[in-house]
Image 1: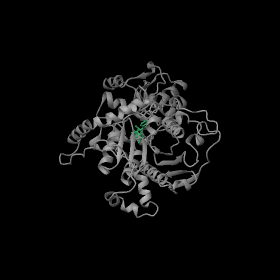
Image 2: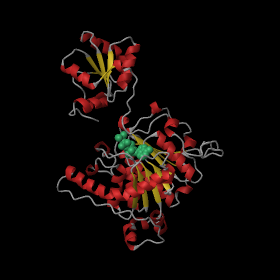
Image 3: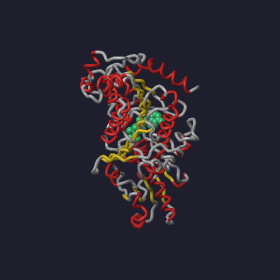
Image 4: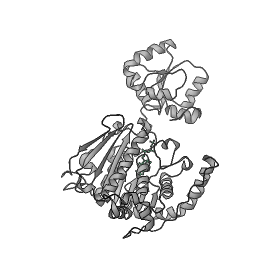
Length: 444
Ligand SMILES: Nc1ncnc2c1ncn2[C@@H]1O[C@H](COP(=O)(O)OP(=O)(O)OP(=O)(O)O)[C@@H](O)[C@H]1O
């Protein structure tokens, strides 16, 4: 099926699925919310987005606090009202961005996200709610937008923004916001915007830090001008591995909404391109760095571009745009033990040494009783401690555990190099332990 017909099918489905979403949403709130909570509002059916020449009285009343600003005024508000913005990703960054765009009166907002709402998202993805856990994030965002501002024409694309749909979806919008969390999508969104001539408001947030830049706007650089080569996959961390303070993407996503407003009202065109850096626990909290302009030799926006159509971004970046945990396979099966087998071994009381190689902050969250804690980053120096502990259990085998079963494999490989042959890693780590052995063991 072609990309275009895929998008058309989705638009049709969007309307048809509203009834289903309503039923699911009501069922969800019945199951999860206190019985006293009011039912969620129903989304209105899709109507065509039309531009207007003047604001009506309800709009004047609704946006009066913005209309009073000379920097916005009637013309600025009309620019928002007649504009369309595509937000790629309805997660930590997308949540506040979409909400503020809708609240401020952007006429049409497209939300594209293939993921579903999880409880662990709610610490920062404030557009979603407990009652919508399990729903598509795009549709959940649409429901929230409708609750906030029913005049906003919000389209939910419950799919992956990939090279098959990128051009046809983004072509429908004036500005694109990259609120995703992975490198392949970042290059894809950039190239899409360059090929379509759309401004791109891009941000990222991780741990306590974030950054924001507007690309491909007013003769400024594109993402590839600054980052022609993707980073090595092993150097990239995501929120589920590194953590993130809820308010950090909240601030960056809100600033993305601000940049959109500045683009739509024309203010942004007068500014030099900058990279805004945010660091929550540092001083100064914000720093703005002037960035180099458009690069003549840029592969996509330069004078002789070599990229003239979308390409395979997973191959280009050498990494998957995955949301779930990444499970590496560094060891042969014989050097690994499944959680189920390790569970049996514990139950039958076979002597062994269990080494937990997670960071202290993770070890504090939960641990299996009787483990020796040796964080992976200190592992090389602490091999003597491990060998000494093993002596105490009469040289019995060593089993190594971590959160996902990746660092534990690295640790086994390291022990092999140091001549320790009877060490195995526990496949899938503590997350798998929670899933297949003990559902009461905490998952994080
Ligand atoms: N190519 C893509 N197409 C559509 N949505 C995307 C794409 N890449 C990333 N996203 C979405 O962007 C959002 C990024 O937000 P964020 O990192 O806060 O969320 P998350 O992936 O839910 O986090 P966690 O790692 O905690 O599960 C996610 O909802 C993700 O599904």
